[in-house]
Image (cartoon, rainbow, N blue to C red; front, side, top):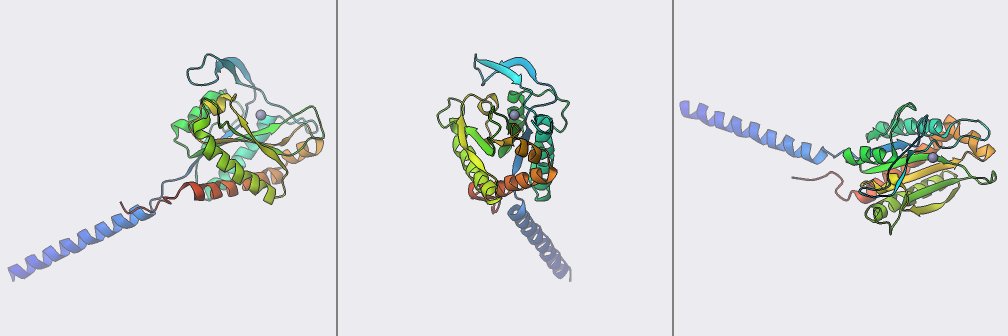
Length: 250
Ligand SMILES: [Zn+2]
């Protein structure tokens, strides 16, 4: 009798251990590392002309953050449009289970371009999307522009391939949504790219110097359309970059 109780006890322990181990496996299989997106809504209420190094250890300096442009028709400030779009994007991404880090959530901040890059670095973000609007002397010019870290830049070569890959997905997603894309251009002179250890794209959402596009950029429905394309591109980019889709057995 004693022996049988002890045997049953041992069997019980074994069963409990087996269940715990099984649950641990299941947890490992489904514990997908969150894909972290850093959103940087460009500029802020007031620019800061004090300078900062354009790259880690560089002697060259540029203004910490410029004041951005404003709408020819709406007179709206670029920093306001960038933040409105950024907050829409945050909501869309969080609905889909992405982890989001914002460099700013109000216009009353003073965060330099290098500091914004470091927000993404410190958060170990998988990628950064920087939201801006364009302006140019020619009011006839319209459409989106995508800027990526240069393939040959001293500080940007390492993050070029992944950044370019995301930009290609974004170009496709925007065109599929009927948005004109002027192209993907490489830059090696941007503080926010040089400081970034994270793949990064600047999405110039359109020209505030174009009367029609300026009105569209100020419109929540159009901002949402653009940000949905950003999400579609992030989903496509994530699929191609994470061959380990979180499904690991140890
Ligand atoms: Zn800008």
